[in-house]
Image (cartoon, rainbow over all chains, first blue to last red; front, side, top):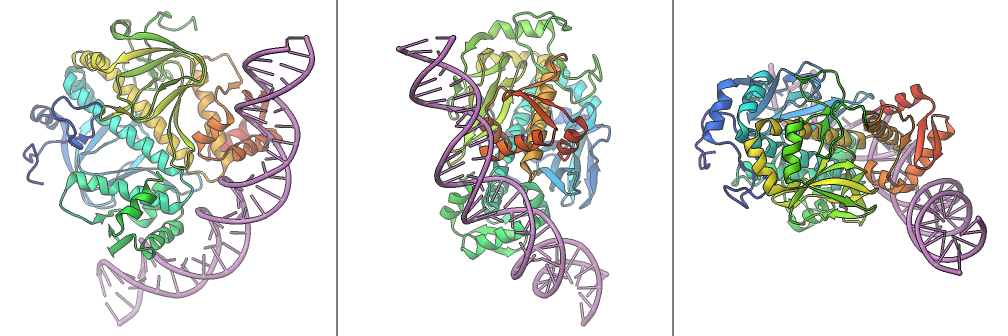
Length: 244
Length: 244
DNA sequence: CGCTGGCTTGATTCTATTCAATTTTCGTGG
DNA sequence: CCACGAAAATTGAATAGAATCAAGCCAGCG
């Protein structure tokens, strides 16, 4: 949290892997995209919000008045299947953005998984700001490319037949997220329920449970408890996840 | 082709549904995002290319030297599964853009499905242009949001258990695409093979074939031939596709 | 210490995959 | 223009993995 290239200040931050080799710094994973100046510009129009765990941020179909940038905590975005089940489009963590709209209406719903600290950016002010700041826009484009790759990766993950493969790919994704945020911690923290995982990887709750069981019975996965797991057999794990 | 708001000129065009209600014109589906000025600016750095059917545009992992804008024809982007099968990330048509990179390398491979006329935009020139043109960037952001929604929709589609539901959702997506491009034609043209459809909706070739059969046996789908289908029972079709 | 919701586990059912055999379509050269 | 060969698509039979339904377990919390 401390030893970042930018000191931790109370302004919105956005991180992503660059689409193109970054002019500023290359090979560096998922670096902060915004300069101090840009973060201050965003902070000028942003409203800091604290949300408690399990709170709805917005509903699919609501008028899209704001975009959001997560500063701390975890959020899921989702939409409803006709059968009543819920499809999770994405899990969002620190320095991620959400609030995608279509024709002025939110495309998905959003709910917090933990207590969340976020910045709320009114779209009117945001678009006005963007029209005048080409560099800020460029950084936003980089972030959007990142989210697009993530969404494509999600779709790719979903095409695997075996639930344990989808689960391994999912865990790898979360691990990567967390490694980028904090290089020290070395178990995987899962802020979402088994049910949420099921709704993200497109399996039933039972299948997810069985897949966890299967991976730990085979000595590939260990668990401090249900929300803290760690990879015991890295090669075997990669072998399974790389099926993705 | 003729009665567009912009006369058909030899410059790159990009279309998308706006994320926010368009300031210029609202409710209008998938409108042209670029002004004459912007298209000319892009044309100045673009190289027009003609590609024959089935040609590889680039391979996953190649250095990403250019982005592409399709002017006419159809393209697929895809990546390989470890089992040798191919996962199709997207089908691209007129006024769509492709060439997404990660760290300077192409994320997917791209191959034409038909003869294609496209504009090749060198990334160096493109990023240079973007840094100076905030409005062009803003339009690009709109397009990226559109592609992100498409990718999320793709992932959503993939979570359905029944192949005929995935197929119906896919056909609806293609129909929508083509309706936006040409409001007159009223059968659905499928430039891709059954195998490509299978690789997009995440089913086996056999399952796709059976799903087509099932829909036509039930009188929901008609077919002039394998590449031209039409909806016979719209309510039933929507009922199935709306499961998505 | 017991309750509640999240999670695990078991038995059954069902659909899609797989493998394999045909049939159809399409491009090419006679 | 037709015939051929190759590729694409359809169809069939057997199998396997996942969904579903339902019952029990566990953990965290009052």
